[in-house]
Image 1: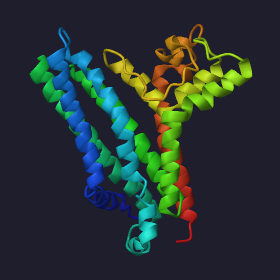
Image 2: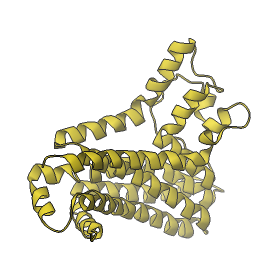
Image 3: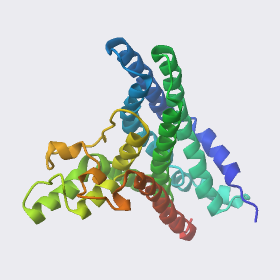
Image 4: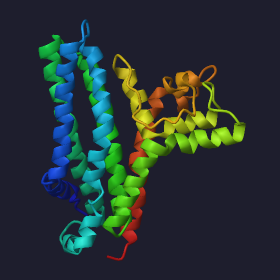
Length: 291
């Protein structure tokens, strides 16, 4: 059977490219990178391009997940709501082509956003700071692309799994709020109830595993392995841990040699899981949906 994933992906890339909101977010991301580089060059002394590169972690964490979710949350359910999915499936593409073609097309849009942001950083790094740490820049770009793909996969998976726009929006917004605003309450809160104390630096292993499993936390851990400086996770903090703990990775908080699932590189596995599992669930439900 011939695959039409590439055909669907091209159509999705073109359709997503017509979203004014999405391009506004991409423009905001690129603009923040440009303004940030110029501001750092103007105000900071004796700073290198390698150190400035870590600044990208802030706008990428803030804007990239939102752009990815907007790009993906209507990918499949929008076709179902309009009825165009029946017409699409009446043509050569089948349901597999639809899901994975939309995933590929929407990921390409987010990839363009990441590429533009890093291209601006590359040019401004060379112009303003005189050099570019190319290997670090390339590694950071690759990690960021995986981060963006994670949220596209999450959104497309949800979109394929549900039947209405409202459900898709509610789920992706709810998951985003859990990751950004509620993660510490949902993890450190039970820790306090169980052990009757705030989370110490050397916390129980199960808690460190939960910390590592947040894709935002996994992304910053990975990014910190390839860039100079420190990139801190963009998450709400409620003071349920010591201040020292907020600045440490799970591997650093583990007494002794940390197991592999607490190492920084394991963040790659975490991001892949967050991308693949929602798509697998959405694909399964879409294959069996009565359209």
